[in-house]
Length: 116
Ligand code: 5GP
Image 1 (cartoon, rainbow, N blue to C red):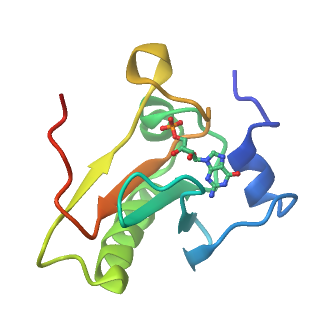
Image 2: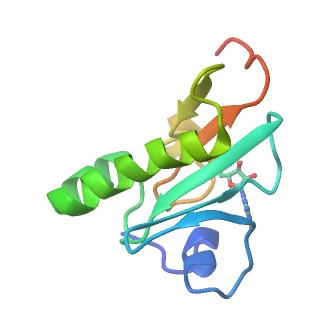
């Protein structure tokens, strides 16, 4: 069950501000408030979905492709396509997800440490 009061839902409704990088009809990209790397960007689709599984299940093909094309566009905008980056999406308690609206983290700008 989607929680309409999660922080990213509030950001989408403009009840809470964000430092926006890119927005279109399907998605929004903004800087993480507590960056874990020199560049730490979050990307969220605008439809109500709790995690990756939910997003793929609920979104139509146009929305799915639009979101992932936007990820690519933001990578270009951040100028990180050559040096690299890490994309992460946490889900549920085992995945360590804090905000229950599907999002990806784009970490870049320096060497990102090993996963463990
Ligand atoms: P999760 O653990 O759910 O994958 O990541 C949630 C992320 O959202 C965290 O990295 C956290 O710093 C970020 N975050 C939480 N609240 C806010 C907020 O109000 N604004 C922004 N820009 N990021 C937030």
